[in-house]
Image 1 (cartoon, rainbow, N blue to C red):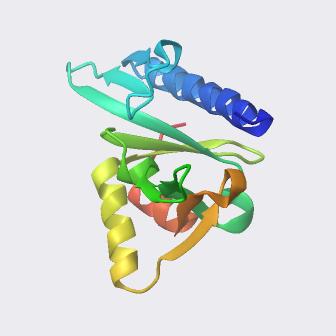
Image 2: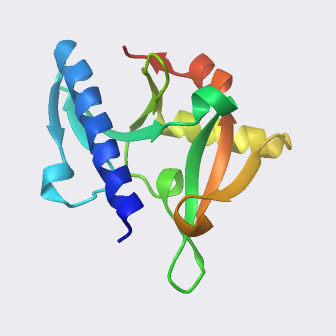
Length: 157
C-alpha cells in the first residue's frame, strides 16, 4: 500500500471520529468499525435514542469547496484492470456523511438510497460527469455538484 493510501486512511479515520463525536452530542450511541479492520461496507454503527440502527459511511472531500463538486466513488479497477463495484455501488450503509473540508469544515448526511437516486437522475438527464481519479487513476468517480448535495442532505454540524 502506498504512503498516500496510509495518509488518506488516517485522514478518513479522523473524519469518522469527528462524525462519531457530532452524533454522540445528539444522544446517539456510536460504534466504529475502524479498529475491527473489517471494512464492512460502512464505518459507523449508530443507534438512535429511539433504538433505530443506522449504518454510516463517512467520506472526506478536500476538493469540493474549490471545485464545487463532490467526488462520489462508484467503481474501482482491480489488479487486472477490470472495473469492480466500490464506494457508492458497493456500500452497505444506510446513510453517507460527507465531510467537506474548507476554512470551516462542514458535514452533510444523506440517505444512501437518496444519493444513488440523485446519481441515477443526473445520469438519465445527461448531466452526470464521470472521471477517473484516486490512486493511479483507478477509481471511477461521479461528480455531484456540491449545491445539489447540500439541497438534498442534512447539515449535521
